[in-house]
Length: 374
Image (cartoon, rainbow, N blue to C red):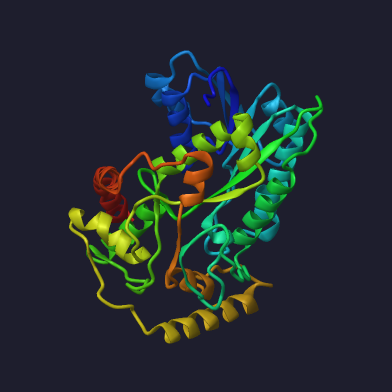
């Protein structure tokens, strides 16, 4: 089912996944209009999309996801919304009110705008972190949507993303102003890598400061399955196509899907090494300290920061939940997404790796210069 002639809204259009999704929509669909929605849209983004724009109208909508009037204006006349905008915070550095306002309230307001403006399809971009791992570090290997797991989420980020996706799924089937019904679905990508990944840049910067030796914060056996950004964009497109198809809409609507690809299962630290070894980086053989000692260190650091909170807000660079996430085997299959909505990774591991390495190679001189200048 094609999206030809549709009008779509992409929130977070300037982000890592958003820019890739917009380009894919332009390359593979002849849509009437794509609305790039973000707090601020760089003019260079529109310029970079000219080569594949064709006859599709690209419109810029700048505003706050927490502004209901702005969202209604953005959704007016649209048929599908890709909701990617959120605050990503793995260190609990953002105040809860701020992250809740964007990730939960913003999602709720956008859903309400869709109902008021008769948008028929809504795809929400969630995260693997809504599943865990839990504080006990209980592993999941090749899990699926039926896997039972006691999440016991601690991060504000994962908790707010979980609540936002619950609200999205609850809104499935809501009656629109014109009498139609809203169809929603949720995508849960694994750790997303590829061109533009700020986490990879951060790890590369740390490695440069450490004489081109990457830090090991993950046990080799703590395997996860990262997913390439291009394949995440493909999953979004397939979700939208499925929600437009009357038969698939019944199956996919109201469901969540894990999105992975054929990237080899490997620990987070070893994945960094896989894509940076061709650039001359090595990696520490062992953890900087035994895990129990690191957990104790994190506990003492968190306790100190909590005691100082009334006077000054200090965010520790590492906490127990992040340490658990980095050292827990946590992988999921994409077979349900393949079966229900025809998702098949467009990019092989070899191609995804090559593209990622080439991008990192282009960034390496800038990173070295930036770090030298400090």
